[in-house]
Image 1 (cartoon, rainbow, N blue to C red):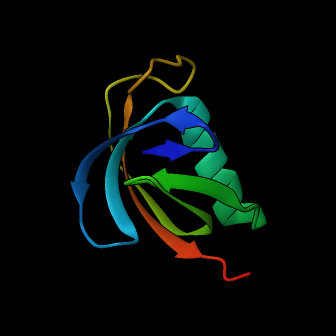
Image 2 (cartoon, rainbow, N blue to C red):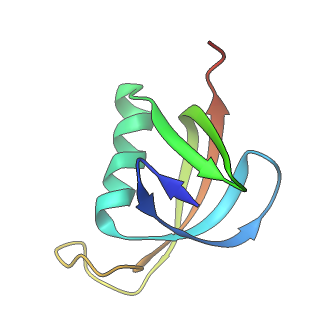
Length: 85
């Protein structure tokens, strides 16, 4: 999966719009900003591109302090809401 051109690993696909992902802090911040400030994100999954907002974001687990930015440090449950154009 890609979110705004950043690769994220999908750990579990809960539905067409709900995923458990492993994300870097940068991607986590992008998702957080989308949810809080209603900033759209581009999600590419299974070769399908969608403009979405984050409906909910839950941090399940973090192996790292927020000051670090590893490639995959945060386990997140994210629910996307597709924007119909």
